[in-house]
Image 1 (tube, rainbow, N blue to C red):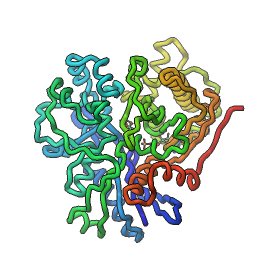
Image 2: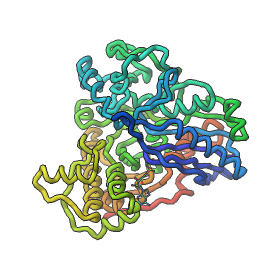
Image 3: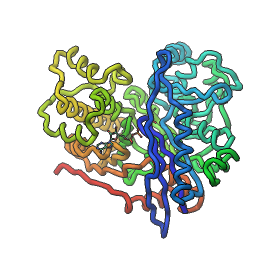
Image 4: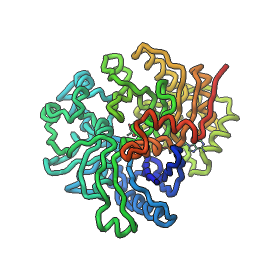
Length: 453
Ligand code: ADP
Ligand code: LRH
């Protein structure tokens, strides 16, 4: 039996096919494509047509290699959406238009009240602020988050998946439903669809898509917020989990939400997880910084080379990676250097020093976030499970082990796709529940351990 995960991150997307035999999962990447924001009239957008064509191209690849999945599910980054009855356009969360919404929302509800109500961190790009920045929102607009929108193009059915909906900042933390009072207070019309849980089968492919790809399957919703799927595939879910990709999402899986003022001041969030657990975590600027550094250097250096070069550096200073200025600067290297100059510190200039300084600063920000987390929860953690593409950065893994004195477990690299598949396997009774699935994950995927003795 094959299951297909379509996992689209801010930097790339991939189709990961999983076969299950004798209770063993085996994954194979069958299709990969780039993802990027595009600039139009001074604003940044995702190219949803290009992404949908890539989704269909990956389905055709299944046919070509003769491995037809019984089901598929799509996950993407959170917060962004399409108003499906009027456009296929999707603003990218790094676009500055949402700053207008931040101002407007803060005049209608205080940050304290909003956090108590939703449990969601303050990020300028949260959907709540994006929606408040829209002109002419209308009841009939049909709000679909990015994976919901692709599910709709595949099946013709409009639903909103719960875990991703929690990133809107519009769900009530107690009821886990869209907070209608909050909508009224903010004058946002009810543009939302039926909300469904991960594991729900949406339906089969529309006739035209079926014809184009040459087969049918069931479209399932997974935890369609990529971070939600990634955390599902953690093999040490009782410790700290660091989902390391374009963003670093550092936190814990928890049965309870933390909405204390300490949690709010540290800007931790309570995102909705599979089975209504919470991901209590902090967004840290993440590999975005090194991606942009690489782009500024015309992509002459691979991530592996940047890591190797960084090992030769003696540069010691660090910067605060979470400053708003690093969210979408025109030129990342210049922005980093300016940040040092403004603090009268000699900035890094050689490639090896820039790369080292970025990794060192990230490691430091993880250490600070762990201190905050332990303070808020009153617990001490012994392990950090780093998952996602960024766990391949062994230098960073080593730095984290050294700085935190915790045991670092790196892997699985494709955690998000694996979590996506787990939701499908549970929906098809291939496994009983997430605990059983997590046991299955421990064996087949390459994990590395780092410990500072
Ligand atoms: P997302 O899905 O959020 O776009 P990924 O999980 O694919 O991100 O992770 C991408 C990141 O993984 C890259 O930005 C890079 O920093 C890191 N990465 C990928 N391959 C390697 C490698 N071979 N060595 C070190 N780091 C790597
Ligand atoms: C990571 C992620 C993160 C969100 C951001 C928009 O890909 O989904 O969890 O905060 O993108």
